[in-house]
Image (tube, rainbow, N blue to C red):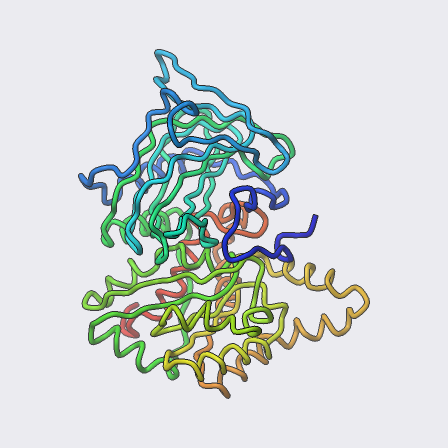
Length: 429
């Protein structure tokens, strides 16, 4: 099995081609602090919006639209459970449970809430479907944190710009060598406002240590139109190009926090994602048109960890974008995934050219900085900012991760906070 960074996926994918195949990482057991924190997260901004999906799991999986399936190598096993103490719920002992599709409005925020009992943790996800019924690559995955009793779980997600419908997935913890049960009850999906999303993000961020990051005072030199639009009002469409780490950053719903600084501007965030893929792939065969130009960005953000340390490929994409439209470009080094893991994977890909691979890794960031300067793109070393915060805060990676590569909601939110801080007014402390 190839490591996740090397796995290629098409623009749409089947339900079986999931990140449940990611390899194991250490399991994080959350304590009382987190349980209380999640209650606050789900309480943040709760309104009276009608549910677009609701299920008490009395008849699942026999109810219409619910499907069972494997998770990795484990076939489904589970049952409806009812007792006077717990009420109705559903226990997944192995595999995954996929809910019925429900209609969504493109770019609308939705709050997903449910209760879970999962002594060894688990995972949940929202997948989006386009008008043809194809599953969109840009999904939203998160952990179900461990608990021996029923605890509120869930979060806020943004419907993809191409989505007409969505589905909810629950599954056992794919980081374990053998599946352990996850029990679910009282699922509801409701529309959420931008303010509710911002409050939810604050509550998630409050579970992490203080963010230490002071962006460069001379930033924005290559973003005059973007910053002008943010300050003056109107609409700003941000397309984010990259891999699953780019997707995780986008799924922080950072535009909700950014809107507090720029309330007159409607900020749209459109992830344009291909798993385990960087500009070495996007630069060829007219792919820039499909993944960038056709999405009509005002600002393109290029980020992720799958560029194979190929700075020239990023230059090629920058040039194609500039030739094709008048959008501004912000290039960010990839964060979240531990740098040691990224480098080891790069070396594995070049076993007979270790010296060359080492040089590529060492020179990547300074080369990329020069390329952005030469090509008129903004450069933000988010990798350095992330690593500095991780060191200063002494936050264990497992607390921010859903596996050894990808972020959970805490990791996503912190990654998004760096971007918000970079784009926020310079007089904001």
